[in-house]
Amino acid sequence: MRSIEVEVNGATWELEVETGTYLLELLRDRLQLTGAKVCCLEGECGACTVILDGKSVNSCLILAAETDGAAITTVEGLGDAGLDPLQTAFLEKAAAQCGYCIPGQLMAAHALLEANPEPTKDEVREALAGNLCRCAGYEQITEAVLAAASNPG
Amino acid sequence: MSAPTYERPSHLSDAIELMAHQDARALAGGTDLAVAMRQGKSGPGLIVDLKGVTEMAPRIERRDGFVEISANTVMTDIERDPHVQTLFPALVEAAQVVGSVQIRNRATLAGNLANASPAADTPPALLALAAEVSIAGREGTRVIPIDTLLVGYRATALARTELITAVRLPEPEGVTGSAFLKLGVRKAMEISVVCVAVSLSLGADGSMTGAGIGLGSVAPTAIRPRSAEAILVGSLPTPDVFVRAGIAAGDESSPIDDLRAGADYRKAMVPVLVRRALDKALQRARAS
Image (cartoon, rainbow over the protein chains, first blue to last red):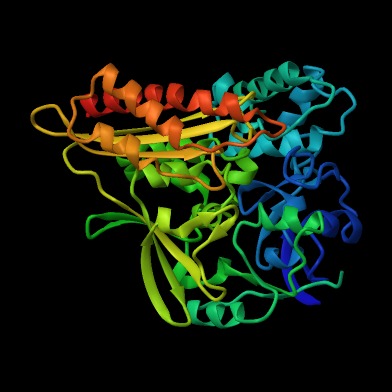
């Protein structure tokens, strides 16, 4: 067991974690934040994407113990009150089909827009290259990110 | 499998001592180790997280004719560094195609080397650029070239308690250019069918005074085809010379059949990619 202090969506948690526990399971099973999804568990699909100290990461590949002192944002932490402009844009562009990949897509897109508020289409595609959508709704997802960038709410 | 012990040392000397424990594994970005642990392929008794080691803190700096990239520097830092962009475009191009942004935000250059996958993207670029690694261990520190570090399939010359502390690239002098090309079936999130990096230097008379080539996914480890480099050095950078160097590089490759491509196809693509990479590096050298 290991003691960590981690900030998740603005709340500071002091937790005892098993050293074999990953951030994804910590978020889902301990903190009941089930937005980050369990999928490939090998960093291929991006469904577990969260933002750690300002950077998009695969939470399936990070041990909970590694996050001591870190600040994490999950999809539950997007938007100050109600939906974030990115989420609104996803709805307006019908970017979600089955929806399973969407929390990861949103977090990867959020990290992109924080670093680059006016991305080109190619930059959006590059930033989301690690987020697979099995419904293949890539065009609508890209459009939604571009729409959110041009209308940041 | 029981949960491993986890340690996060602050100093290099402590990290080296921890590595002496049986079943210790070094953890940097975790993008290889976590996958191996998830799949049960690696079950370390002790995880030594290097991210707290001050001597390895992310840093790219010019020093004594080298650009030094510390062990905990991640791929996205390398992609964006202005010195690396100007001096080593081949390394930028290689770092840019490692996994996804999420992976590149965690994966380190030193980790990509230590993992020693034959299909890794950055080792060929580091070979072509004649990079070296700084290593620290119980017996002291040493600096060795990348081709001495990579000794075989997923094998390095690192002793059990040794850690890569930095990668350093000699600053090119005069008129130089480099390039990296990756052949795969997708543009992103792809493990190479073949990847090639080259660098060349031009003398005052227009002939090549130096050349480096690195090949990935065509041998048990990334390789430096020296017979191909020898064809380039001293010659004028003509299409004919580039073709001959490409053929020599293909002859030095020893690829295997796997699910991504056949050995024959891989071997046939080496001369093509070497030639194209040399053309690109030459353009860059002339534009510099």
